[in-house]
Length: 437
Ligand code: S3P
Image 1 (cartoon, helix red, strand yellow):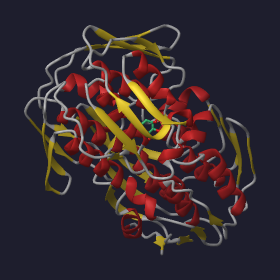
Image 2 (image 1 turned 90 degrees about the horizontal axis):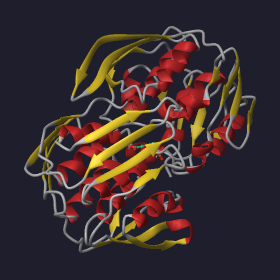
Image 3 (image 1 turned 60 degrees about the vertical axis):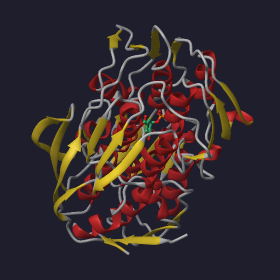
């Protein structure tokens, strides 16, 4: 377990790009793998999570080839064309890879066994096995549907209409991917809209997807089954969830002025930036454009005097992975930041609410954590603590960012999981002037 520390840094300056979007990278490989023809992907995230998905798509019959940095090619087998893997599918740390591929396999008449690392094997899977069982797949797993788990895909998958009990893009996507092999229409009703990369990419590959928003804020997503997906190039934008780390670092380190280039700004992902701007952050969107069907901009970020705010629960789906780094920003803000609707943080790569609370406590930040809320009382951050990261990349990166503006260094007990989503994090931050060693 390599520990790492971050210490008070001089003003951050410079221009950086962050790696490709993790959610879109998984989906590009998965959909490319069931399209007919050759899909070329540029900007693919080469983090461990996505590399596990690449390997598993190979085991399921697709030909996945790396042509150069971030440049990949996928020769697909067509919808319904997956082969039964000869060995276990190891998804590593990735909930997205595991849940999406369980959905895809569930629609095929094959059996596959899924496993992951200690963190993934603790995470709840009943949220996908319940709806996928209704479509005709069968599952044998551990208590709570946890991995390792065997999926026996449906011989004749049935389309369903399913209302999500929790706001989850992974569950929505798993059902839509199973629905690819079902006749007729598969519908997912989301109480609150979640990231829509699956819908966008399905449309991009030629599937018929209808989206209807209701007055009560819910969204109905309908896929017509058994399409012929046709290979199409995918351009992956920079991951806003990764951009969050240099952005918050620049906001809290006095004198900083940086640009993070090519950041994906899908409205269902950009909740953190909206929140930071409400807190007084000086963030300017430069060179706004659309690339690969997603809105993108370069973000200029300058050190700012932040103030605490109430973050509405309704915003949670659009910034669900960003609460750990928001808690760090809040620790440096004047006054109280209240975050609501955080129950899902308890079932991420770690129990993120508990991990953030322990990290704040270890570094002298006054706060209150409840079952689904966090209140941070900001001001000075003494630092000096060691944070347990619990195999969670975002906990590791968040507290390293905290150390850049704390009075004394902040240490994380283990930084190796950072490679799941952000290979090159420490050198990139060092290039801006951050003292991370
Ligand atoms: C993701 C959805 C979110 C998010 C995860 C990526 C995706 O999970 O936390 O990092 O790519 O669909 P949930 O669907 O569990 O909210």
